[in-house]
Structure formats: C-alpha cells, structure tokens
Image (cartoon, rainbow, N blue to C red; front, side, top):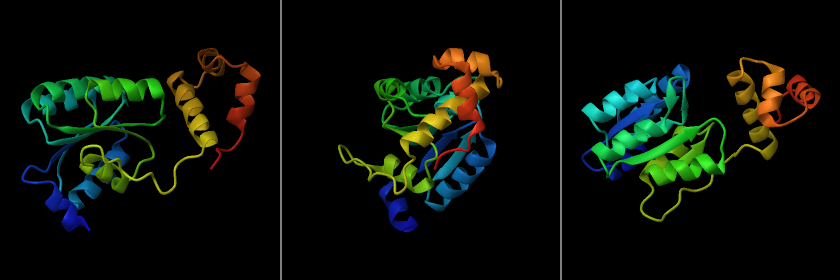
Length: 184
C-alpha cells in the first residue's frame, strides 16, 4: 500500500510537519516516511515559518495551536511561497470557526486529533472534490467536549475558576466534569 501511495505523490514528496507535541511529531514523521514522504519537522510557528520560507514543501501537516502562536501563520507563509502546496491543519479540538478560517487561508483539509497517519495521508492525497473517507473510529461528541474542556483547563494553568469563566459554565459543574473519567 505504501508503494502505491508513494507513486501518487509525483516527483516532489516533501512534507513539513509542524506540531509542539514532540512524541506525536516523531511518530507521525516516521509513519509518513514509510509512506514515501521526505519529512522535515518543526515544533513551533517560528520553525515552521523558517522551513516554509527556505524550502517550501509540496505537502504540510500543521497543528493549529502551538506554544508560540497559531499554526495558520505557517499556512500563510507556505501559501505565499508555494501556492500549489497541499496543507492539512490538525487540532486537538475541532471548531467550525477555526475550520472555516483554516480553509479560507488556504488549508486543503482540516482534521481533529487524534488523527492517524492513514487519515492524514488520505487528506493530503485527496484529488479535487474527492473527500477522504470518514475515520474508522471517530471520537464521540462527549469525548470531543471533554477534550475541549481539558484543553481550556490546561491553557488556564489548571485554574478551575478561570476555566469555568472562559467556558461560560458554573464552576461546580466544571469540577464535576473534571472529576470524572474521560468518555470513550
């Protein structure tokens, strides 16, 4: 299967991966190399912009939220340097507004984490109006909600009151949600 996908890529198989989750970045890089891509990685917006400027790749997978900023900044630089690049934006929590912003700015597709290498490869290689098949095991709505709450909680430095304010929910309700195990 990897051989046929490598043939579909044409001559230029360069791929830029930008994510601040180091273990995920290493696993994804290894998986994409097995699929015939020539991978370069960056763990920050600054690193992604530098690679996109110096050596614009044919393909890119960029995390939306990075420690030093927004992954859409990397998408913009890549669009300027290489308009034909196919870009997939990844994020730990999906939202319609950010999906629209990613596509407007030039992303080819938008995937919620956890996305595996097959989902990402399908999104990168989808031709024209062909949509990649839906994921085999998508997250439940409860799980997506829980992931989003956890993400905001971490961004608020695990401050329950601040998290509740930002999520527009009662603090005690949030405490009950945080005390429970994650849904499947």
